[in-house]
Length: 346
Ligand SMILES: *[C@@H]1O[C@H](CO)[C@@H](O)[C@H](O)[C@H]1NC(C)=O
Ligand SMILES: *[C@@H]1O[C@H](CO)[C@@H](O)[C@H](O)[C@H]1NC(C)=O
Ligand SMILES: *[C@@H]1O[C@H](CO)[C@@H](O)[C@H](O)[C@H]1NC(C)=O
Ligand SMILES: *[C@@H]1O[C@H](CO)[C@@H](O)[C@H](O)[C@H]1NC(C)=O
Ligand SMILES: [Ca+2]
Image 1: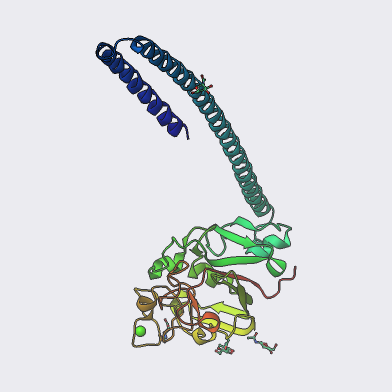
Image 2: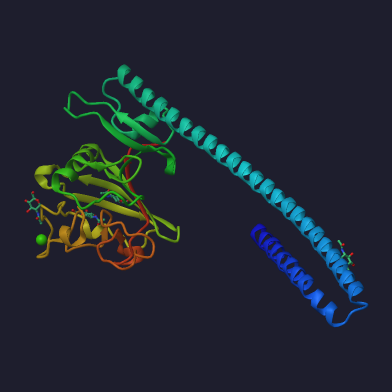
């Protein structure tokens, strides 16, 4: 807008210069004409000049007017730009404030939760076993907690994520897929010890899961597809064998709405990773399906498969699958596996 006004302004200036040049040329012509037809010529000449002068004055005033208008317009636009900039800065400041407040609340929550968990540890040596024991002691906010080391069992301190909201809470989360940046194509040792980040994608570790499932345990699997629909599969009975028995899976008594029970096919099978083929197949399922899992020959579900994003999620057979709901080549958007004792009551 301002550039177009400026262009018009310059164009007008150019016209004016041309006009003035024309006037000069005419003034040079006149005397010759005068010589050709003496009498009346001088008056015509002077009226011409006067008319030209009026035109020039007319045009300069127009020019002045335009330049003034242009300046006003520029000033108005500059004012508007400044206003917008101010608004934007205010908006950004507000956003920053909200962000700060949010992360402050979040970290304060973490600190109190951890302090609470540790305080409990000091007063009772044996009782903090998992998230359900924390729940039993009135820690009812979902989040990250530290389970104390157990000197008697020789087990280390363990950071866990407790789901204290779903179906009465008390759940210790053992697996999560939702961000998609952590590879689940890991070796035996990594699956044994656990990997990933407790707030994001992780596998808690077969050794920890084995230890946590020595008491009768319920397993709950929560699934979400790319349309935002959710399903769950629950097993009233879930156990892992120890490492000597290849962390063999035992599940029983399925309930839920995830279609066909797609873990049943993996019941009573050993755990396999890319460097340990314990499956019931000529193929090497862990390498084919790019995860660590209780591969049979090979899968009816592959919850530790490859995370594929929306659009790419139906093109592969090694994705995060649950055949009983979305078939063999639909990689889910989100999965959570969580456990709690059968004896738990909220
Ligand atoms: C310019 O000239 C026209 C006639 O040619 C006249 O009507 C108009 O008022 C003049 N404008 C100015 C600013 O002198
Ligand atoms: C499962 O593992 C156990 C012990 O590690 C082994 O004896 C058994 O043969 C394995 N089963 C299969 C099907 O590989
Ligand atoms: C898994 O196998 C056991 C027998 O070892 C059986 O009792 C149980 O019902 C099976 N689980 C499922 C979900 O079929
Ligand atoms: C499964 O449920 C049935 C009926 O409720 C029960 O009799 C059986 O003991 C359960 N099995 C397991 C392994 O929990
Ligand atoms: Ca094999």
